[in-house]
Image 1: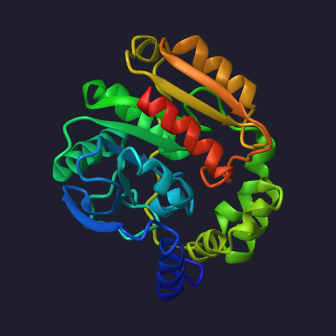
Image 2: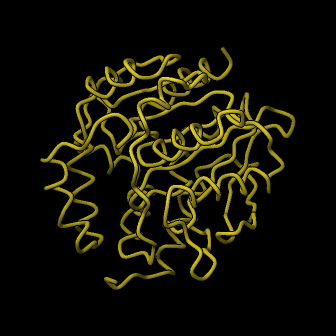
Length: 285
């Protein structure tokens, strides 16, 4: 712990939530892992779309720049990942410790929302969860999009991990800000509400994230689900060309593209109109 302030976190959370569509709803869905907070918007009769955020200090609210655009054609559901920063509350001793726990949590979440089959999207760590879940339950995923996925097709750049290490070992608001400003090339400061929430999440009493295993190559080659992968061209996490090439070699129904000038941590809020158009075109195609 590093002096985490729960009141400051909630104020920052509510500040970014204000950038979501005015007709949003907040649901709390019980699962065996605990109560999951889900933000919902879009027509009730539209096809469902589940959005998973990245890791670290990311929450469901990181989709604020995409929520309104995607909600024109989808019923959008954005959960705070159980055990991670946000308003989901893990049951005592029941937070996910394995990939099986995570996929079981998503099975229960979809069931609790009354969703049999949905489109699914994820950013960074959330993309790893989304891809892993699709391999676990391909019949429940209609289409899948991955925004700069980590640990799915390639590893991290060593320089990125070295730069992140001080923040990971002892997270403080200053270290979080400095790291994000470095990785985004200063773009993080353009959305002060988002950056404020990232800073407020430093020291959040989160569970250790599940980060293994990397998806099995044979399972990826057999996946019969349309996939869109968009890589961050200016990201420092990994080599975007290697990520797209590896995905193309493994996934039989994948479409890939590299978004120039966009960093890893600036997704999915960077270039919102272009990104919304790409995602909507894929989901409705």
